[in-house]
Image (cartoon, rainbow, N blue to C red; front, side):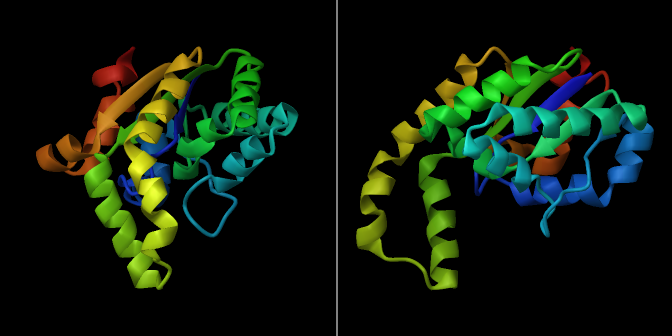
Length: 200
């Protein structure tokens, strides 16, 4: 079985991807053998998995992943997709990455892959600030240092995931949205049999 962890980035189409897989869960499972489990939150993502990893104890993470894999096997799925864009920032907390690596390494008969949709810092920043402004939460003096360090932080997060003993599917947000809908490119690249990395 292949386990795909879609870890973001934030502001890189994650909500659209999650909503599409959630809304068409039965069709995707029945036609393509991909299970997108019912999230345990009010949103269509698996934020509860992120929270377990962030806590730093690999045992609950392993239990969560084993439970999701058991559901996939019961549904006769060949692929399992779990998604939370918050996971992209896990490398900022080393204990979280150790926790994730240990939990994935303890899974038997599961081939894990990390899926990252990367967005250019400049356009990411515009989208993020627009959201903060709409929420009335933006203060330039609070975020200036963070934005200065953002490009390097993105690179470091990607490198940290690459350093894990897992295969990575790295996608460009700009190219995916320019050449077609992001959801369609995301699907064809990773999960549709006979297409892209999904066939490997």
